[in-house]
Image (tube, rainbow, N blue to C red):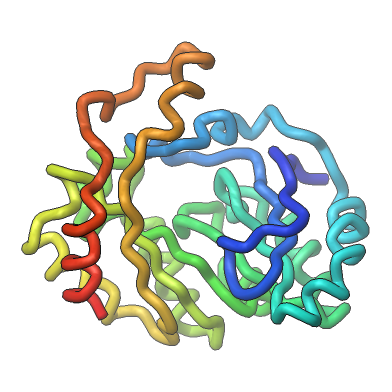
Length: 232
């Protein structure tokens, strides 16, 4: 059994082609810019079996074939439910469906086994060093390094994403270090800098949670393009 927060049947932003996106419930990180705080608590969400989830996903197999799409396990953090995730991915692969994981690489281990059934990892690279990672996410970057080790051993393709936050992750030195960190990953096909936005603030108000970046303005798109050119 697993916990699912929600499902998007025809996603277009979570990997190649048309995607069936399953948002897994639960996340150990508390990123200051997180726009889905409602996915944090692993005790919430809809309980499902991997078979239940697969039966929902396979109905869109025709769309996957025509668009070059497939399924994406997002969150929350899908790696926090390793047994459920692995079983679901294995079922998809056995049925010829392209698989992707949208993750921060911060789970409970068993990474090498999970990656055997994963075609693509969309890696949300939070920060470039231990102090910055701890300050931004509340977590220890060592767990990401464990995932990186397993990822580099695998043949799984990687798309790296990094949220650029004014005053926190938009400095030139930070971007230079980011490029160094990215160079340490194998099989990277794509790197995308994402602009910080404030679309999730209302959720924090509804849930009675303090939003730590309330005085930070959205990222300037022109500056983002300049920084993106330094990464490519």
